[in-house]
Length: 296
Image (cartoon, rainbow, N blue to C red; front, side, top):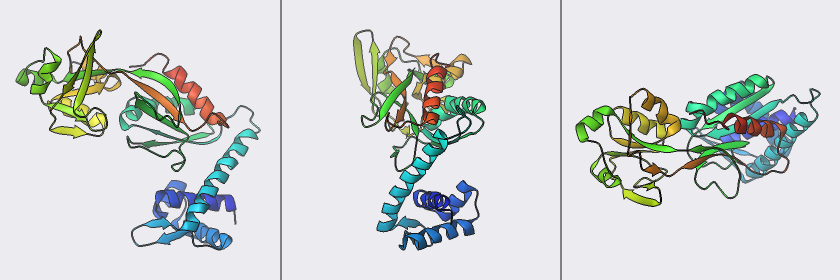
């Protein structure tokens, strides 16, 4: 049995909770996935997974085995990278996570350009705004937009993320244009459930205000709120990397231009500076250079 492959298959089944998902991810028949897991259990003389018609869960022995398998798979990747006869050639796979909005607007194109420079490298991008345990999800690099990144992770700033208040011309024709932050309380405001849902902080020079906005429509994803604003649903607080193109085409109007929403930072987050792989280091350097001049 190829034990390294068996460990990889077992880890995919365990983290994805599905034989079918592992089969699709690894481009391997479901029968072969089942066989590798069975051989892992024979090798370790322990039942690693509990199988029901609806889900797959780890046994206690499976949890211990998963941790060790992930460590060994990471070590195998490092050995491959360090002993690659191609010298500076990057190979293997990188796993990233980012928000849907930033991934769609800018990161996907950046990764495509990065891969064009490194034809032996693969990238798997997990898209979502929810928190992830980078170790358990086997994520090499997380791209997150925040004012305070996770203190347990190493954060490398990539770009400043400005935001802007926007609404469609149709909405403003119907409801009027706010002249002061206090006027926002009388408008339909579209709020981001994961950040400042009921309080929008705006500043004008040394003056700052925190406006309690009423919202009948909130979402946990910025692109959803962008499209709601385009449809005339209300006023949205949007990152400029999403809003600027629509502002330029006149599909949205910038509001309260003298008042600036709180700026955030686009961070690349990773677990440790020690033993940072050549792949991650190369991608970090590429992204820093890519976003040195903010494209939006």
